[in-house]
Image (cartoon, rainbow, N blue to C red; front, side, top):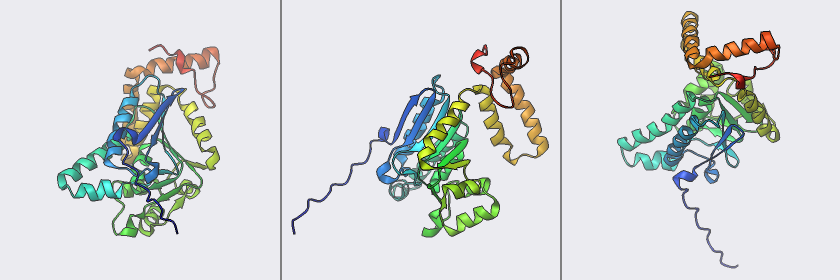
Length: 288
């Protein structure tokens, strides 16, 4: 038997390499980039993701942001070694700093200036529910795996994961999901409300691109106001929601919404160039 040379462990990725991104035709494609670790989120990745999101948010050439993962996973959640064990060894101050870095970019994603799409190409576990909830639309491959496995190793699904399940899924389904530690396929996740839609894996990018191309043609100010309004109204009564919508519409006008509505009305009534129930108006003609 010949002696085999041991395989050297891969060096840790530099912080700037933990997230990959490019901009193509108005769409920012952002990816978790630790495929060797199933894209689990380390402190380095969390810091880098926040920086990338901020870099792209106000770029004129970005109309829509897509968040996906390199390799076979979207993200397997928080890195048990780097995010938990190594950080906990440094004490409470390090733990709080690491939490702020991760929750900080989740929050930034929820209130992003541009529409966002989660393109879930594989595993989405635990802490991955934070960015899943942060994206406006979530499209997954039918064979993707969604899991709250925390209960299987003696803790609760924290970091917002339990709240995400409770927020998006029917109560009994969310309770079962959190307590049993069993995975859902992409199709099951769609049926239970955790994601928007599941498609065959070979159609995933095509479907996401189709949605992104529709979104990028719509008025950007109206999209931002709409997504923020939908998120704000979750815990409101009907009357409070109605009042919020009135004020949000007034605020939208100050961001150019009045000009957009005037142009859309002109195209509908005068040009008869579009049908609001079936398509969007040509927002490129709005004078800001």
